[in-house]
Length: 635
Image (tube, rainbow, N blue to C red; front, side, top):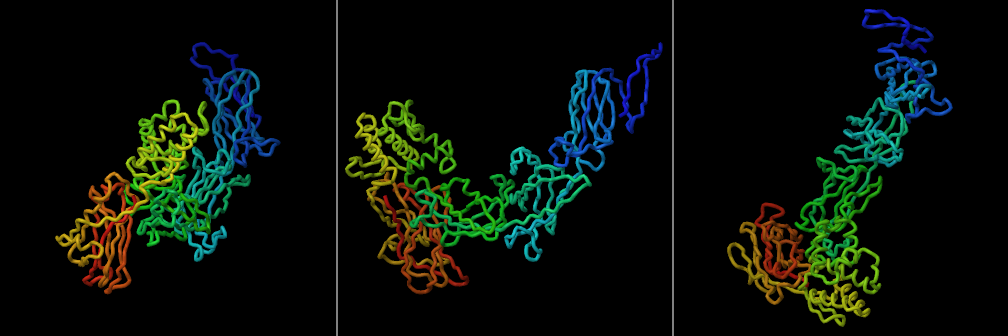
């Protein structure tokens, strides 16, 4: 290999510079200097064909050297150029000790698998210079289609439609785990055309992952891909993506007890709008893309069929009442769909003001999931602070959170610790108003307390008594209340309407059971029910499962009846539509619909319900005859 050497034996006075050039022909390389080094050090390295793209020279000569590649060394005041020999080796001789930068110029047609420049240090003898990897580029192309028959391949376009606008992305699988991890770069991408075809060119060899995003951005299939460069030249691989189809269905329901399961006595939410949003990485893509929409029927069921297998998030819209909470953890709304499988996802909502108490296990889950189930972290902390403030038991030495979540504490017996755990759950139920302090209770032989507040005070006294038998009784009382037993004395109630206006007339007396009927005509406006008779009840007593019961004598000439609840702030919620296939004759049918956001008798007494006649087949003077209107509840 040729190199240029400084000559120091000639001096010319009066000249401001000394130039010397010596060309020694030993191959095909010419070296050019900016200023010439003088030293005994040298640098040698290799430029090699890196077929697997790992940036490392394979041992045993498995990856050949590449000749005639231009290599430069740069240092303090010098810039020397050479080319690699037939074995791909470069050498720089007569270098002074110091730090240098070695760089290559990739020949036309190659891609690099290492950095094009690297630092090197010379100490006065031979030193190993950096190696540089080159390879021929690789392209992948293929088709994105709907895998209708589930065979994993793209059949004829007439049978398995092509997907246009799908984004095919190639990621560097740096840690070779087959997953797209945070920080792993995109090395190429392309969108499929109208025929579902895509092409990604000039890829480097190595471990890659191909990810397909459907139109709208939803993540679909990922596939590991090992790209190998061919020494014969640039190569192209065929890689089709057959996107499987899946189904998603379930029930949207009022999960009264918050157990995430639609129980037999829990009412489905009809006419709820269910949306599928495009998702990626466990998050909804911004801007939000609605992939599909379904509406629940009378049974609360929604169905999505023939969905491309991809990442989605489920979003449930109205008529979920304002203020209701999701029963499952929000992560449940990102279902994992599988090809040729219909996944069931039931989604429950509950009113925290009406839901029964949470069990000890429920509160443990709530706190451990950091507010991802029913309450936010801030709400949880407020409940804990509020419960500890009124407690003589949960002092600084035994914190409520510790009693709830930890195993045991030094100096506290197992009997007392279990009682403390159950009482911690009860305290959070009271602080969150899942149990109102003035709710009536009847606890049998366990306690003479007649309210939740009195039961709480008795538990505190038992826990502070120092008597083991008292700890067992405290545990039993707290466990009973946390299970919702003994509350409200097991009573049910009925409230008749005392203020009902229809067509500017007071009609409350005609809506009592056994009274006259109110004939609602399409042209005469709504019937507004505003006051309910609850005088016999204490205003502080909890109300459970409040419902409005409308008894209809007849539907006439295509009539239906919309039932709407109006909140004190003016917001409204459509509870449902009453209708019958039997028209123009008496049906005497009672319809019962759940009311929302009513927790006390005082709220119940001032609840507003509006009934509106609607003509469902058009063009007829529809009428509905209302026999009675009541609110039924337990307390």
